[in-house]
Length: 386
Image 1 (cartoon, rainbow, N blue to C red):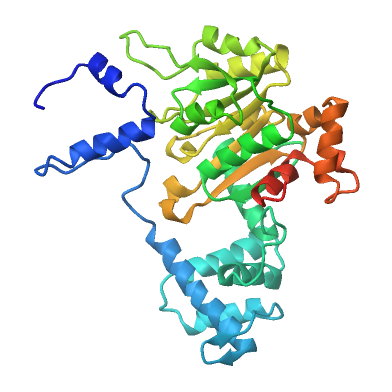
Image 2: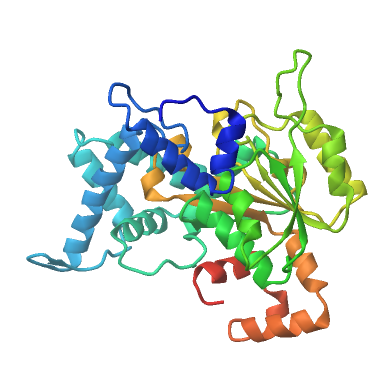
């Protein structure tokens, strides 16, 4: 059919389908035009990769395999790496193989852990070797000890500009940002912090799954949209939130707000005025507001400051390494939450009936299940235990 359709006609045809279905249909239509290259702007997949980290990764992997063969080597069968002396053996390996790709970065990683973060050398290198070999279940489940400290420091730098906090943050490694979203929704619901029919807010525009997940039968939340409706003097959208929109969050029946910052698809960060207004609302009108901020594009904005930097007590951060490091296929993400947080407080204030149910859920894992932190409950959701 050779006909130009108006926006309204397109809405009538496709307005009832999922955005993902609509995207697939557009790609299918675009492929019919054989003479042009398709620009698929519907998914944030980088068209580049970072070579040096991969070189270091695979070279380090070769060292790790040699470590397994030190303990057992029968044809294809190898043993398990041993910790004692492993750091010295790595340095010898690097010195003996100076031309291998990525050795300089491996050496920097060694010194960063030992000299900057004061790790024990053998403990640090063994964790990396054992991790890359993958011969053990990860312990702790949430994240390996040294890796968590590295990722923690990285996230605080990128999200908060190395701001100092009174209490520490926990980091949980997950399979990408989308997985983090699903786990957070599920854990909030399982722990009665959000119940079916509860009111939540979405700061739009926002990543499509945030629009769709709340309406699943499992949750069936009442959704209040906070619109980025501000325009400049020329009528051009600024993708910022006027005070009258943010004021919707003064309603204490709104239990949680979900933010993508920088937003998707414009990749524009909240300005200082928006953040100051949000801080005022939380501090003076809705102190129990749970804030979930998805900051996966933060590294593309200079001098970015996450909402968690100003409201650490209320905020969970979702982060993904996929975009900045070009590793969408590796599914690498993280959830960060301050040890002192509103989620633990709200769990402690649940009605007696909810507490009794949750105590039954977690009693096999803790002698005092009521004191189990929200972050640990999130990990158990992922482990498919509870």
